[in-house]
Length: 456
Ligand code: NAD
Image 1 (spheres, helix red, strand yellow):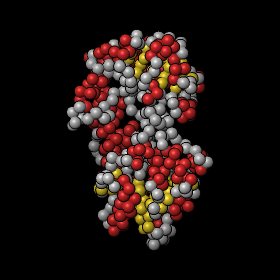
Image 2: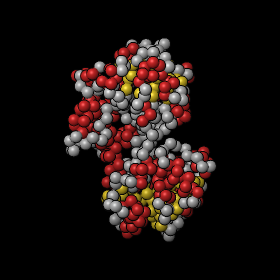
Image 3: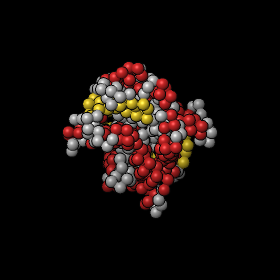
Image 4: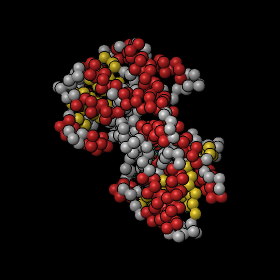
């Protein structure tokens, strides 16, 4: 099938590469000429396991191409995926300017019949706005031979496992209209996703608005589980309970399940924070206050400060002259994505109190340099308090403590005797509960986890 992907970011590039891998003829458009140049020169602008291999092989066999030419991209695909960003606006609502710009371009250049797919995470009612935008362009062109239908097909992939998630989805949610064009588009979608439904049917068909809502409901639920556990972990710290034991104890109930119950130093990334906010904003437009989600957000804001607070409780408010090691900058493992990462909040806190920090991340260091330069644009002296090291163990030299923010596999089994020898003080602040407090006590390491105070 001939497919155009509009927006070649985390979602667009993975979608394009995976659909090309399945035999489709895919053209990816991006307005960022630098990104397109990297891809056309055989590079990959993001870190995503397994993506480089399928991008390279499908570029080589001619099924995956990249362009900045809008007219060419609209002409190419009978299916037009919109996978552009939907960042939060100032009031927390999803900023639809990129989605509607993409829709406008489709309307401006299209001929014949197009299936237009909203893959971006967009609030209820966006498909209608996309439809109106395309229709108004067609009207201006007085082109009544062209037709289209807008489908909602939200993406559920996880960064760090995006290729695997796309190729083996738990579910495919498709919202379509029931008019003649909607049914025509639905038939195209069935054909497009047929390879994913061979073992079992994974597609959930519904109306467009319900599909748009489903994506927000899923992310809001996951964020809720995390904030719930984080709030309990903070209480566990006060009452002398090990939240990890509690996690096992409750997760074994199949009604609760084990996934997404990890306490830590807060969730980040490009999706949970903005999607929770956008859903709250939608509710307010309809005169409803989402009390649970308001709490989820504020618990998370607080949780991103928890490691910094633990450091201050241990070392005092003035950290001048103290030096720390920080392992993990990305918002989660297996990605270089730094959007809304907890490390950024922690670094602000520590350097503004006078500390110096040696930081390490297996893949996010370049992105961290870019993002932190913006975070500290007004205080370059503070930026200079952050040093990057190539090996995690090198960060430990003369550090007053080790802080862990991202649960990369490479950090899970350090040589503790070596770690202890390198640190000035054998102290670990573990924002992801990677280690066992008993093992730490046995190793002579002072250990501060999240909700694990029973054993320290
Ligand atoms: P991203 O910022 O990585 O990529 C978006 C790309 O769109 C950028 O490269 C940008 O240059 C390009 N772009 C913007 N306007 C354009 C236009 N008019 N024409 C062509 N290209 C344009 O964003 P992302 O992380 O891939 O997210 C995209 C959407 O998918 C968002 O709505 C997001 O919420 C959703 N989503 C993201 C994830 C994730 O894990 N990143 C998962 C599920 C859903």
